[in-house]
Amino acid sequence: MKGMREIRNRIKAVKGTGQITHAMELVAASKMRKAQQAAENGRAYATLLMDMTETVIGHIGSALSGKSGSKNRTKRLIIVFSTDKGLCGSLNTNLFKTISEIGGDVEYIAVGNRAARFIARLGKPLKASFSLSDHVRFSEVRKIAEFAIKLAKDQGDITSIEVLYPLFVNTLKQEPTLVKIAPVDNLDEFVARLRKTYKLDTEVRPKDSREILFEPSPKEILDELPRYYIKQALYHMALDAKASEHSARMVAMKSASDNADALVHSLTREYNKARQEAITTEIIELAAAAQAVDGDG
Image 1 (tube, rainbow, N blue to C red):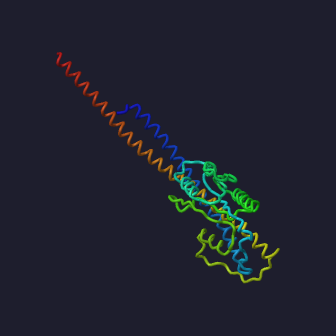
Image 2: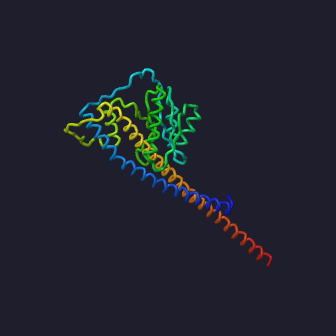
Image 3: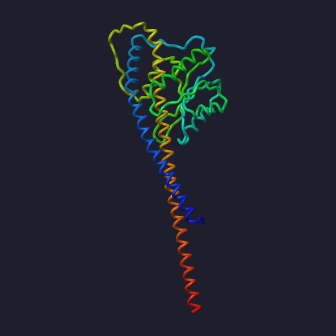
């Protein structure tokens, strides 16, 4: 059996680790709540944009279709949201498994150091790497969206822009999800999908019977609207990814804290057993010595 000093030192080390993981759990929980609140705060703008678009469509129709020359477009551009740091359970592992299963001619934009390193290690084309702060700002996401749109326009061979991110289902569950955000071939379908994402698909849609004058022209407005949708959709996914990251880290740290507590309990029992054996041995030795003294007398 291990010596009592060794067991005491191990108990002390495990307790210190447990305090660290518990502190990280509390920090992750706080960040997760803030990320969820940020997603809620962004809903007002998204709702206004959807209502405005549906009003426009109601007057001039959804006159969007795929661009000509799409036969020459063969590549997919996928934006991957991962984490910059570890200690978040299987979150990144599940994302990387999905990346490994994607076939065909694909190029990637990594958001997060973990995805950038994994894609580079696989030898797949990595066009750019970005990082997001814990409190995601729209300006950060806008740079990513504008880079992806410009890249697709300049290369001329990209058929779609897609996003792979961990969808926040609940505190214990985050699912790797691959979503196409461009091209927006049908605004009606895109709006319906966003309404479902924001859980607004059951609400009554607004109707506006007023006559509307469009400047500069209905076509130019419809051509520009998809850019706003792409940025808004990407921003919502970034918030979802951050909420998933903090949630996964909180659960992982809670599990680590629970394991540390269980290990301390087990080591304490082992220590008490060793101490009891040492006391028993001392008593036996004292009794034997006393008996020997009595025998000599």
